Image 1 (cartoon, one colour):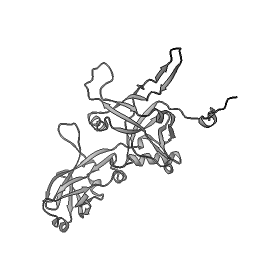
Image 2: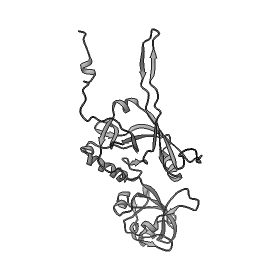
Image 3: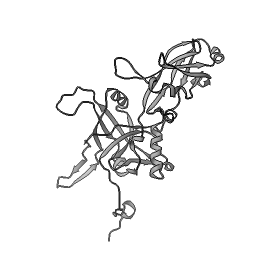
Image 4: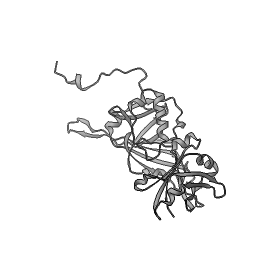
Length: 315
């Protein structure tokens, strides 16, 4: 018998009952953060963490960006690189990197938002039709696979196929080793719809009379008429929440807010800053109005919304 290193370099070949294999890809999510071991101790804890992370601000490290449900998928993986010897021996020199294209429904506004991710190095979590999330690990933390992504759409339909309202995403994973040899899964019994994609809503300056500012709340988009005003749906609920403001270096000096009210005529918020603190500002100094977080908005039934802060000027 020859001496063998197999005992320390390979695994046994038995299979556990109910071992998981990747099913049909149903969803993708861009996730550049990590989920600590304490947050995937069981299915419910893991899913609750994904829901929470989807409602974080887009600037948060652990923000979870869910993409729409996939309607078509095609594998475009790179072929294995093979080598041969002239007497017939053939072997795989390098495993091909995985890749695929997927299609899902979305309009012009969504396409614009998605294209901000074009050709960036990101990490992706896969979710299959069996209700299983797939990713990899760094240490004990669950993370997404490293990948590049590119979104395509916006062309006129030809009437020859289902084309109207389709967005195509080309996904190229950067490491075959990570994807094939170091995949990890987490099953979920939660409703994926609870994982919420958010819309950017800009706080916008309209006018002011000294310390009383009129602030709009609009969603930028492709409609030539102009951005969409969310006041009618959520103005009163948002006015009841807590805003903060700051001036100075990194806007770190608190500027107290006396009140926030609704203006039903202009369909905007009326934000009144403390008169004494506002008067103490130097003419022309800039300060920032900070809205409540997406999680606070969600708790107030202002769902699928991230309000973005606005820079104002003392006048």
